[in-house]
Image 1 (cartoon, rainbow over the protein chains, first blue to last red):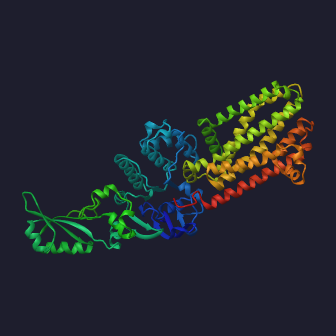
Image 2: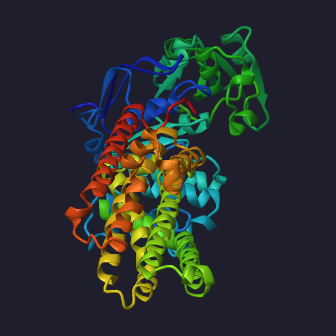
Image 3: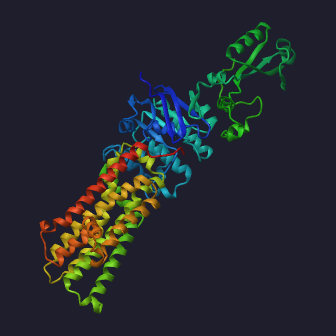
Length: 335
Length: 257
C-alpha cells in the first residue's frame, strides 16, 4: 500500500529565514499522525507545502501518491482546515458549503444532500440559514471542518482544529476525527494541545526550527528523549511486603480493608517486565501495573530543548503536570 | 469554475451594497451633468454634438474610476479577509479565479452602462447619433475598463494589499487621465504629442470626438484611436499574466506567519 504522505528532504525559506530544512517523513494510509513543534518550527509552512499552497524550494513530496506539483489533483484527494480561517461572512452556512461543493463539482442534484449531511456532522444543521458573519468562533471552526470534508477526502490536514472551542466542542471534534480515521481517512493533525495529540494520534512527528527532531510513538519518542516511563504498581500484602521486594521504593500504603500498597517504578518496558518478574519471584500478588507519566509535554521539551517559557502550554496538561502525574493515556494494561 | 467565482463576486458586491452604491453615485453624476448641460447658460450654447462628447467622456471617465477602485480590492480582499487559503486548497485554478473576478468587475461596468443608457438616449435625441453614441461608448468603455481592470488585478497580485493596489492603480489612472484633459496648447510639444498618441484615455476621448463631433462613424475611421487602446489592453493583459505567474511561483504567503 502506498504511503498517504511522503516527504523527502523538503526545504522552504522565506528570504534568509529557513522555515523548513531537509524535512523527511512518511505517513501511512489510515494513520492518525500528530505534527508537533514550538511556535515558528515550520508546521504551518509544511502543511501549506503539502496542501499545494506553497511551492517548496527543495526536496520532493507526494500526497495521496501524487507529486506536490499537481495542486489541483491533490486538492481533490485532501481536506484541509488551515491555520488562517477566513469565511465569506455574507454567506449562510449552507451557501458557504454549497460554494465549495460546486468547486469540487459534486453536481447540482447531489449538493443539497452533501451540504445537509456535513452540517449534521458538525452540528450546525440548525444554523444552516444563518449568516456566517454572526457565527461564534467555535461555530466557524466547525464550519471550517465541514468545508474540509466537502469532497470526502482520503487525507485530512488539520492545523489547530480545536482552537477556540469549548471542552464539549473539542470533544465533539475529536470524536468526529476518530470516526473519520476509523473509516480509513488519514489524519495529519498539527496542534499545540499536546494532550489532544497524545489522546488521538498513533504516531507523532516533532519538528523544531524546520528540522525533524523526533518521530514515532509516544513510547519511542520518550526513549529518544531519554525519559523513563513511570509505572504504577499496586500489590496485595501491604507496604512491608513491597518494601522487602523493592528496597528504596516510593511506597504509599492504601487505606482499605485489604492490605495493599502502591508504588511508582521508573524504567522502560523491558525494565518494567524484569521488575514484574522480580515481584512475582518474591511471591507478591500484583493487582495493578499500568504505565503512567506519558506526559507529551516533557517529551516535547526534551526534544525541542527550549526554555519552558517558549513552549506552548497546554492548560489541560498544566493542571496535571505535578510529579508522578502524567497524561491519561496508558499503554500498559492492568494486570 | 469561472461562473462560480463570477457569481460569488457579483453576489458579494450586491450583498455588501458596494455595487449599488457605485450605481447610485453614477446615476447622480449623470443626472447632475445632464441637468447642467441642459440648464447652464454657457453650456446650452454648446453644439449638441459637443454636449454628447462631454457626456460620453463623463460616462467613460466615471466608469474607469469606479471599476478601477472596485477591481483594486476584488482580489486583495481574499488575502485581507484570509479567504484566499480556503480558495487555493480547493481545486480552483488561479486562471479561473482571475477570469471570474475580471468578469465580475466588467459586470459592474455593464451595470454602469445600463444606468447611463437613458441619459445617452435623451442627450442624443434628434441627432441620429444615438446608436453610434451608445455603440462607441460601449466599445471604448469596455476596452478601457477591461485594460484598467487587468492592470488593477496585476498590481493587486504584486502588492496583495488593497491600500497599495488602490493607490498605485489610481496614480496610473490619474497619470493617464490628467494629460488627456490638457488643452491643445499644452499638447503641442513633441513629447506631449507622442504621449497623446499612445495614451489610452486620450484615445478614448479623441475617438468620441471623432465620432460625435466629426461624424467619423466607421471603426476604420477610428482605427488610429482604437489601436493604442487595444495595445494598452494587450499590455495590461501581459502584465496581469506576468503578475499572476509571479504570484503562483511565490505562493499565497510570502513570509512565515
